[in-house]
Length: 125
Image (cartoon, rainbow, N blue to C red; front, side):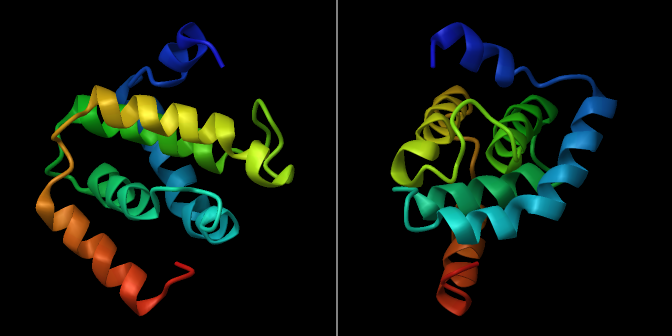
């Protein structure tokens, strides 16, 4: 994936777009995560990003970028089909990595602690 396409995916969007993405992410995140957990090298960061994105205290721009990346992650049709084992999630990893770089430092310790708690209680979730 090239930088231009990733940049387009990560546009925060208007408030209505963020609300639509948030609903989609909340509905599809955990089923998608369970399928991808073994193939994503940064599960803790991904779950912390989820908690950061749905946290109303997170700045709007940060929420928008994370919701865009997470919406791409849960999208059933993306650049490379996710059923192609390791290769299928490589485009998702690229988008998520770019999102993490764009919001550097915005995921708070509380989000990581919630991620750790969730992963300890439900390793597949």
